[in-house]
Length: 345
Image (cartoon, rainbow, N blue to C red):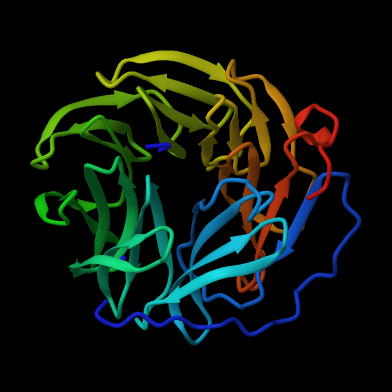
């Protein structure tokens, strides 16, 4: 993976004053506040259209929960700073996690304590399938197009939670479900080559799992990493970003490389087509894992990185009160990436 209903409302945006005034920024660096307030909850960010004549720096698709409106997906033009299209699902509840495979957009959200999964056409944001997954709250979401892994959890006695993984095929049909009872742990998911990979985070010991399409665990290996880390599937390998270290893991769950990197306790990673990497802390890494650039400092809390073609983008949110969302991005040739800036769009 480079790796959403019966009623779909298409709403126009009402403009809200940005929570911070625009500040002077280095050449090639841009930050835009999305013009609607957001509810607290999970958020998602995936590439939209690549850079081209219609969208000089491309677009991104943002999954979030709009204040008083609920879960939504918004396509945003980076260079022109405006909404291309938006879909609001009409559900109560908050947050909308996203994944994208080809022209399919995968959405995981909550609806009054129920977990809902849907697929959208990425060009039109039209819903093509919808599943009521179960009672609980949404967790991780991953897909390679042929197989989608939906993570969700059910609170138990306020201290522990049962973790579930539901697998769905390309026809939007359930293929199986994995259950991890009475756990205080967290589960990350990735899908690669028809197999699901689960990373179980624990203060006691973390584990990496290989899960078959019928939701049975094929293999599990302990991980010698800190409790807080994130996992990304990149072609033929898994990348685990932990504090101060990035691990390369084979499909057989063998650690084939360990690389020192400067990363916060929980950083996310996005990989560009040319092999460069972007962390949610704003670091740009070369394919050889060397730090080659960094986003300028921001008052916002960085959350999710993506690449739109060769344009690196970070979705961020206010530290307080977590209601305003911004998108920071850098021109492909800007000094932050170690080159002269390209012409402005």
